[in-house]
Length: 204
Image (cartoon, rainbow, N blue to C red; front, side):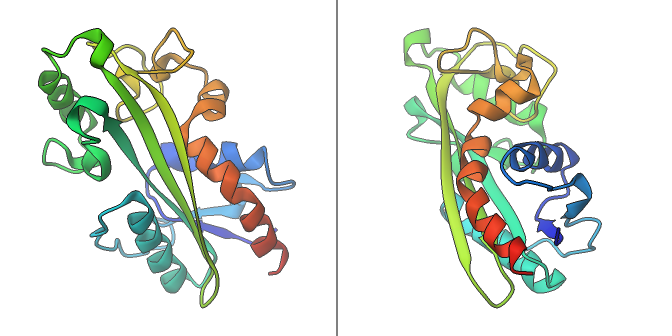
């Protein structure tokens, strides 16, 4: 199996993506996925105004620097009463990129007076595949649900501890990884992208 570069340095995300793709792509081994950090790839400026644009920015930069087919995703949470915010700013909602606890606390504070029936939200993910000098494919995934008032659960990352997916009774942070992947926005996006990845890897 040819190698596939993954545009993230987040070990949790690499494992999650591999678990999703391994169920879709025969003979895909964990070592076939190489993350951006181990490749020494520079981090591009994510200045797109949509999830799709930012996913492509990351995948294009990694494909160019590594010479490998590259996948990337851009994801976040869209809260109904905030008009879809934090959206593309989810990872830096509190000002510092990747401070999950601060982002989560700020969002809860902003929603403190919002009644339970109006706390609808969706996780959104754009997954992109870029082949060096070749094709680009983007697929979207969504996970609708609602926000609870206090973090619950130790699994997942980001806003998982305050999000309950539609049809579930517990937060995403309390779900078993395989259950989360079957429901998640990232799972939906990468499952939709998998056929294109298979074609690319088979051709190399």
